[in-house]
Length: 277
Image 1 (cartoon, rainbow, N blue to C red):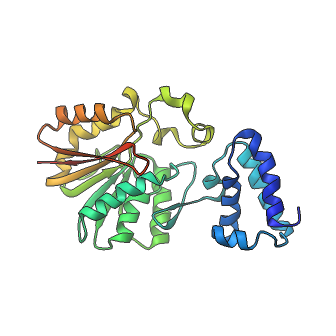
Image 2: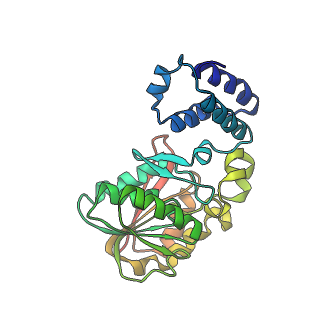
Image 3: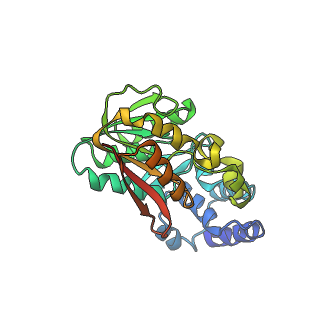
């Protein structure tokens, strides 16, 4: 292996039997080299440095074990920015960017919000980075997750309030304009169809919920009205099969609320905005 392309060809041979896409190897190479995909193509026939090759081989061997590429390099993109990630937090998904964009469309100027189950902080910190006049409280039950969010806040030079709390239990009930959350919503019965990398490496605390993945929604709906101003909103991401159950829960627990469901770019129902009375 003398060139970057030859190194990627070697990685492809190793990864293919494990159904791991070569894009994962390209990702770790690009992040390690601080390259864009275009820059990687421009350097494809360049001689690869021995130290770079050694690191790349070690990274590919970790990929073979289904370790996510984002955890290997400790970084993941979201909404045009880079965030630190670790096995203490969920890897951000592009679908969640659509939920953030919904809030930004609804609040073009100032607002106060709470990001519940913040993890690495991508939702709340992106809102602050896009709207510096926002005030955001980032909440998570996991101290390890909050430590990652704190690092990302410093990196982005934004100043949220960070609070350890099981949902809203440790948050002062001073009503805000909106609550936003990407809560755990996976039913453990779905594990058979999940990626090995997700099952083995991403934190169970951020993935699974009881009652067919609905337990945390039920708990949030029990108290959220005390935290949101009249006419304010609750924005949630959910599993693509959960819309009927969520609609019934909202009608039962928040009967006066207005509800708007949205589909993601793949055409799946994945987001809801609840306007409280």
